[in-house]
Length: 331
Picture 1 (tube, helix red, strand yellow):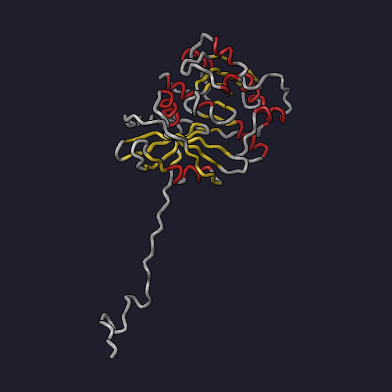
Picture 2 (spheres, rainbow, N blue to C red):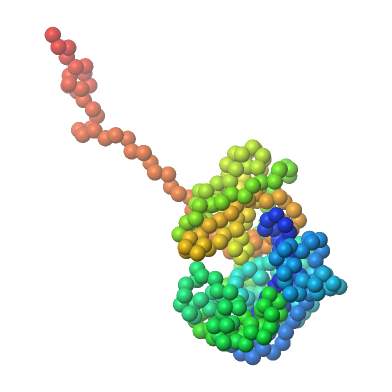
């Protein structure tokens, strides 16, 4: 089993495709078993010229900036190292999707993962603390009594800690998901977005709701105004990429447009979204294409309530003059 961790850079001014600057991974003989091999690669950023404030704080950011490896070279080396191991694991449910998005951007084959285990969710299942909570890797390592001798937010170190935590997880908690159904998978046809140029769109906060599915299915999240004429269109399906969901809506006047919505789980237990119609940059297209390889969430339309017409006893309303006739005039 391959335990993967990534560190990446994001552009300023919003979430688009994360550019990977470090790939770290360890190989386990089995979940909870010994570490038998490790992989580490620092990657020189080339999509975004500057590091974001968050990326600058990463302990390995300097090595990335001075590295001679570009992503295609490091990615191929990683795939060669993985060999025939197609069961992957990660802390959270985002890394393999980010790796797929970067591969799509460089027009490289998708990661050959047949199943992926979210170790963060498995840790929550083992402790029976609810999947809504997000336990940081450092907290989990400390809880398991692991010696905290390596620096966190280093992809290799984080992969090693996540691998060691598998010894504390119950077998029933290790539920693999299938990013791509290998036997039945058919690559989805590309979306022909509108070629119209549109101005930068503001982000919209979506009102928090008790369940994530309710948020994805809400009219406020699904109904999106066209960035050119403001005519509303509806998102029919959301494609997940970690905590970010991608969708498409149609404007009758201008065609198809992408939608991106980041979803967060708030401290009060509710789910909130921030939605935007993003600019169609190459990184955005790559992230969208990678997300569409994942199993979609299909929205269900709320049925409009039919207004019942007033009902009068005895069928058709009669007047005082009898069946269908006029009322007699009083003298």
